[in-house]
Length: 165
Image 1: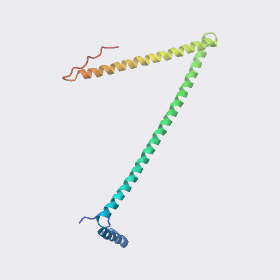
Image 2 (image 1 turned 90 degrees about the vertical axis):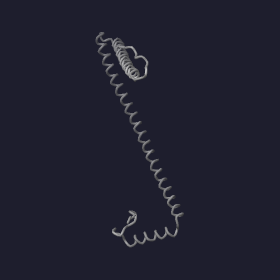
Image 3 (image 1 turned 90 degrees about the horizontal axis):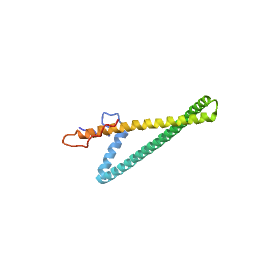
Image 4 (image 1 turned 60 degrees about the vertical axis):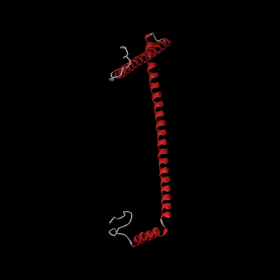
């Protein structure tokens, strides 16, 4: 005997009212026929799918809101970091200019000129160093890429680039 889990069985503590409703619903289903039951079932499926789509739409809205909030907070943190680094760089450069001015006998214009040139030189040196490192990395990546292509069996690949060091 298969017991429908949605209906109360004889062992479950059910009230007489619950048993009466189950019996009444069974009689209604027998009286109505299959057509109205299927129509009601379709309506219930439609309503359930509509509610499910609303849940998914709410989830998307919350996700978009969260992403926008994270982007705004990230941008604010980036602005704060840039301002902080700029202020510390300015303080360092002012101190450097004061030190250079002291070396030139207290002439402020010479200290500002020497400190500015030193700062520009350090910036140019950093950029040149970064560019050299990135060029070496790119060449190494290309060597590995073309060496792997040439080592496949039955396939002639392009020649590996010459050593650039």
